[in-house]
Length: 506
Image (cartoon, rainbow, N blue to C red; front, side):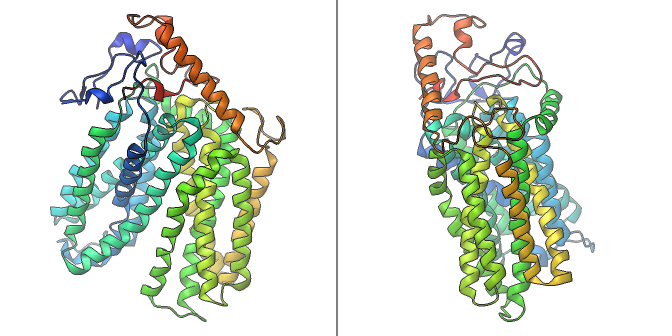
């Protein structure tokens, strides 16, 4: 990772000495180095945003390459059953472990170095997957790779930090779309490659794209100081626990995300049973092709982000849930009538469920809502709710289908979305940070005034920087205005932070 700050810097509220090297070996390109004076700010552009999306696609794909390869377990010397469907679940659990214990580091260390370090480790360990014939080694390496494949969860809060307020949801939506596309493309690529050449080539391909992510990240990702150098690793974890029960907007977002993910997972699990039985009786290949329709939802993600950029996130969430309720009602009423109905339902669920997830992320990512220096921790909690929802949807959906059939399982989703609707309407769009239930601050649907307020604050900070002398020593008040202010309290509650995109070289 990037070179560590001195003890003097770590004890201050800022990390202002720009390191010259990554890992104390690789020189950081001059244009990407952190500039505490803010004279030549780095501009967050489409190239960097596309890199974040590309990296998210092929890093998260590490978790899903194995799914089409389960039938190749005979290539391993051991006669055990470890390389099985349970192996797929182990990837998910390892990823959840990484989200809980590694992604919060985005609030503690320099994120450029962290991203490059994780990409380097995952690509290096993938070499072992490609060459080993020992099943135990394969399993251990797979688990570690799952733990370190959390680069997208570092990039999501970084994109929110770097993007200007009026483009924040759009920037984050590109990364989310990359995540969703990675889940789809990994299965397709692994299946095609293993069909025509050796299954090991799948992992050679994974090595190549991860190395490409590392090289592109080295030349494009800007350096930026640690947000909370005064906190310890265990302090970061402790504040995560505090956020989990003290922040109403985060808890609201997590509960909604949990239920919506349960619906989404339940839909895809029970859809397989519906399409494989009467009246459709489709083959496994045909059923799999329905999943390709999900690419439509991925492609619509950035467009949904542009809409969310203009709306208060609460209204985008409310609209998304209402439409999802209608789509789910269509499935319950006519899911067995025509495959065209299934296609419409899949497209509707993919588009509006992704829009709902992005609006939820936007609801807690604004500095005026929760501590802006805690975005990595907030995102980790949000994503953990996703995993809980997936497990809940799979378990509940399968049991309901077994007992009552696919229509009852589909109706279960209506109940989940009704739960989501209740959670959303209990807390209005403009409630204060610690208001749990109620409506206050009006019902204005547009966040134009918020963006102008954020931009005005940024302009004031730019003027303050221009007026400050260039030779301020570290620790002086003028320098403290050039980067995010860290709260010395462990919880950092109530702290307000400057946007980071004004302190980087172009």
